[in-house]
Image 1 (tube, rainbow, N blue to C red):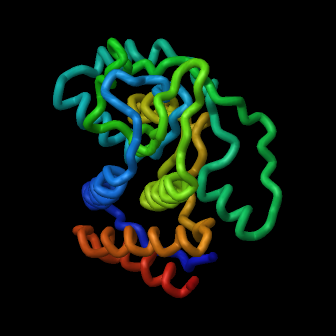
Image 2: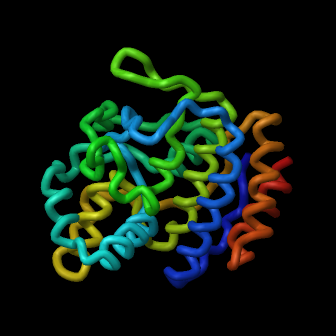
Length: 245
């Protein structure tokens, strides 16, 4: 299911509006899924979460409003730069799959179960601005050290599409990488910010969906188009998606 390139708004405030719209549509959809997750359950809160620079800017806005930059620097000092660098972005992977090409994942590390530095007493200290990588975690059963999370295939499919869309929003020069590396880069951007641990965000090339999943995603994209302050980006994705069918 290949799609044509969709335009992305140039200014950050409009991008943030689109990101917030995507969060809202996803939040309303996921409430229908009977997840076992509850406040204080933090088994999935690890240092392996990836996000875009746009999501990082939202977190920094939150930090600046609360005058907690020193606190953030202390948190990031507990991480190892580049430790959880991904091999490819979600949209790079999708493009390769759609082209039936093999992805070289050499150097991609296994999942790091080190607890997220933003956890305090098993509660997320940046919960209201957490990135989509955190919002999308969920399990139909209570997970633990001896019990892995369980997720319905359609949940995974919707998660992947929204991850692709959010990466797409930052595909005009933004980056996608591990959360700590993105935040470290943004904090140093005005001085000596190093993008060596980051991957360039890519436009959405298409979606990897089964027919029944495509119907659900189509309905969610329609909601995005209807509710977005900036119609063009999600509108193009809708039009492209309909051409695929």
